[in-house]
Image 1 (cartoon, rainbow, N blue to C red):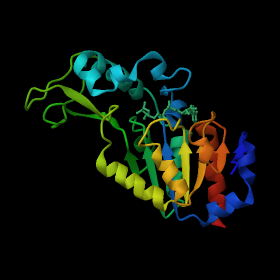
Image 2 (image 1 turned 90 degrees about the vertical axis):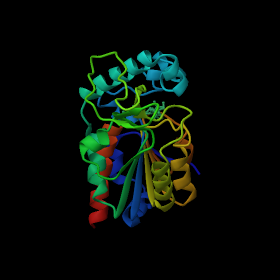
Image 3 (image 1 turned 90 degrees about the horizontal axis):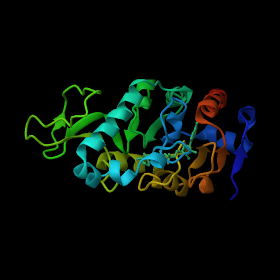
Length: 260
Ligand code: APR
């Protein structure tokens, strides 16, 4: 079935009746987010034009092998990304999801992002499928590392317990996703009446299964992405717009529909 495509913000106010009806009836919703929702905060995406993977090789920097081969290089790369995150703020798309949370009986943000901008914006129900860049732990004994991180240091910290290398609490390529997180996301996707896929290329699995799962279990799938993605083919509604513009307008419509 062909998706209904919107490419200007004004058109969001009068979406097709079937979409408005589904928005009105929905009890549970999932917002599945990727790097694109943070793009307008100034956080680079991975696969876009300026994407991180156009400059760096993921296997070198976001894998266990890469870390063991060159811990200083990997640590420095994450220090750089932490520095970027320390200078950015959530954008209107993150805040729109905070408002959206209040509009549904069940609402969950399932994010692939490690930037914690959803938390900083005030979202309360957030599942992080790929970990986060704030926390660290020992590569050897897995003990959480709670010392303050000096962003200017290239030195890889050592575990006070076993002397092992400290690593960021992000999920690297080839690693399992945090078990509880994926199970929670899966369960929410099965129950969802609506799933908003916002700012993701849908290229990385198993995370990208989430929108598919929602679709096969009857959810209305809405994609928010200025470019086509692997999610587009099974969206019912596509907002071909940047998230910081589309999301506030979408939330305004939801407020109007779900109040009446
Ligand atoms: N608003 C909405 N979407 C946007 C915006 C924007 N302003 N700018 C870019 N996008 C879209 C791009 O068109 C692209 O489809 O965001 C998507 C970003 O895709 P990726 O860079 O592949 O990021 P993501 O989908 O989150 O990657 C998934 O891959 O590298 C791993 O672990 C990493 O979590 C990441 C995972």
